[in-house]
Amino acid sequence: MQDVVETYQQEEIHLLGMIQVCETCRDIILNFVRQQNGKINCIVMEDLLISLFKVEMEQRENLLHMQLAKARLSSAT
Image 1: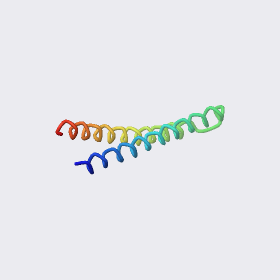
Image 2 (image 1 turned 135 degrees about the vertical axis):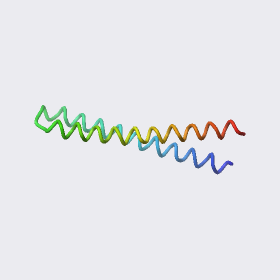
Image 3 (image 1 turned 90 degrees about the vertical axis):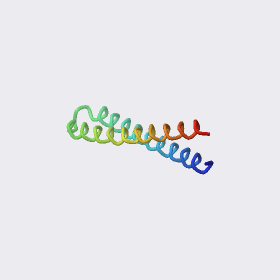
Image 4 (image 1 turned 180 degrees about the vertical axis):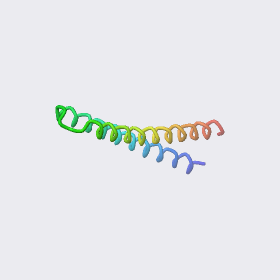
């Protein structure tokens, strides 16, 4: 049982890290767009941000499932 809890905790930390990376990348892209003063293709940047957003939301969904599994496990003990 303790092994399962530890695995969940490690996975949760991993997912939170991946979400943080997505947020950092988003901030970098937005700062880049600001610095370019309209000299870049905004459609490409928007597509890139939307793709990044989808990855982040997938990781957030995985995190939610992980947190639910942890909650179920703790209520069973």
